[in-house]
Structure formats: C-alpha cells, structure tokens
Image (tube, rainbow, N blue to C red):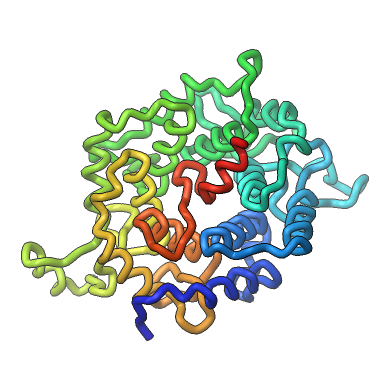
Length: 353
C-alpha cells in the first residue's frame, strides 16, 4: 500500500524492535552490531523519540561494553570478544567504523564520552591506521601495522572520530595534507569520487572528510555537482523512450542511484542529497519526487522502516538513511540532521557544548 505520509509511530516501533532483537534476515550482520545500533538510535533521534532514563543508561552501558581492553577504540560485536588467555585472545582489535558508530551513538544519547574515554589513546591508534598514501586502513594487525585496503570511507570516519573527540595535538595528529591529497586523487573523469568509477557513497565520504578539516570549496566541485544532479532518476517528455527499455523500473522515479546505469536504491537518496548539502546545492534535488519515492515506494507500511527497494525487507541502515534524506529536504516531522557527521544537529551541538 502506497502512502504519502511518514508513518512516525510505526518507524519508532521498528527501530525499537531492531534495538531489542534483530530480525532474522539481519542477524548475519551481527559483526556490525554497533553500526546497526547507530542506525536505529539515529532513526529514533531524527523521529524525536524521547529516551527514558533507564533506556538511555542501558544503551550507553551497552556501547561502552564494546570498548576494547586497551581503550583504543570499539569492536563491532561482543561476538569478537574472546575470553582472556584463550587462543588468539589478543586479536580483539577496534575498527575505524565501529569506533565512529560508537561515538555517534554516545553523542545522540547525550553522553560526555570525551570525559570518559582516553582520546589520546584512541587518536594514537587512528594515526597509526593511516597509510603512506594518506588513506586509512580499518584496523591494525597483530604487529601494529595498517591492515586491509584503505578507501574514502575510512578517511571520512577517521576524521569524524577526530572531530567528535575534539582532538588537537600538532605533535601527533593525522597527516591532513596527505589525506586531502588522497581524497582529491580519487576524483574520476566524470566528476564523482571513487576507487575506479564514480560512486555516490564514496563521493559523500570524500566531500564530508574535506569538510571536517575545513578544506572544501564548493566552486571547485562544479563537475561533481553536475554528476550528483544526474543521480536522481526521472522520466519526462525528454527521455520517455527509456521507459520502453526492458530493464527500466518505472518505480524508481524520484529516487537516486549510486552509479551510472544503476537502479534506484534508498540509501543513495542520502549519499547524493548529503553530498549536495555539503556543497550548498541541495536545492537541486527534486524534493517532492524524492519524498514520493521514499514514502510511496520503499517505506514499509506494515512493520515500519524503509527497504533498499520496494521489493526488499526493511533494515536499520536503509531506514536511517531514508530519514536522513527526508530531513535534509526539510520534512516537517523530523529533527534536523548534521550532514557532515550524520547525526542530529542537536547531538553535534552537544559535542560542542
């Protein structure tokens, strides 16, 4: 059943459900539990949910239980917390993504984590995750060396961690110049950012990372703005013939794709709108069409939440990013989003208080 209404109470119930018990089709993502918690808490915060004191305390305690024993960062799930002195117990590393997720959660729960955490330890670890080319690995190996490929996602989250910790130490800091060079070198011929081809998610991460260090100049990104503008899917008198293509999905009208010649996907509605917002060009988005797509196509009217497409089940990730996109285009029933840190503006204000 299509609807033009944002089903606020149903979405609140959905996010609370996922915080208490993961639906079966999402349980395979247990390793990323902190990310799922971040999405659910973020969704509730955008919806204006008032956390009871007991809820807030329980969630804060749960998040801190994922802080690794060295205090350098957060693991993604208690599944990875091996018993002390067991085989391989030393390999319980924090990751960039889960440390970012944890700090976002604590900010939205109004916890003064910068007083409770050893930010010097965390940033020492983040600095060691930086690769010689300026990118970041997601974690360190047993020898303390960056492990895994670096990409724009890790750059963004590393700089977001630095921002949320309010870290300032010229003697031991991220090599910001090298990081900026890596981001700019990721520009693709058509204007987007990516590893080999332009990708809306990577484009957002690159732009947000530059914004976090005050090095984004919108006038330098006109080609990127043009590429982002063409990510919104629309059929008009000028391209009606595309509707006759056998792989065309008319239900994508108003949504966004993340790469050229791809179908619409709920999450890209945020990655694109967020990117344009960082460049001060969010007005390019056809807000009514996007609203119709999200509320009429990918919003689940039975259990709440949003799905990747109209054919999928809802999940916390797409549900949160759908609300983020709707917030950025000014939906009246949602709290304001900080598009740089991807938390509510009130949470960012709390960090800065």
